[in-house]
Length: 91
Image (cartoon, rainbow, N blue to C red; front, side, top):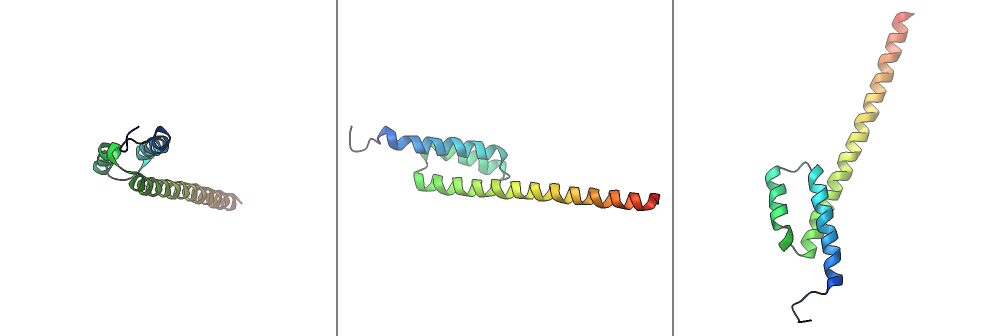
């Protein structure tokens, strides 16, 4: 193995991160242009950059999931409120 060659063990985590980043990009809300730029530049990115992108996309996914849960809770509260109003109208 030459000095410039990266051992196979070190390549695997980056490949896992790259695959995960590609999966996160599918559901991300960033503009399509930015998604394409990340996809194009992904093979040339180094580990610190990959980590930053992964963290950003992961936190975005968590925030979107929290917003979806909040939306579901609000919809349920609204439904309960409407049901109670309908029940009081019938009386």
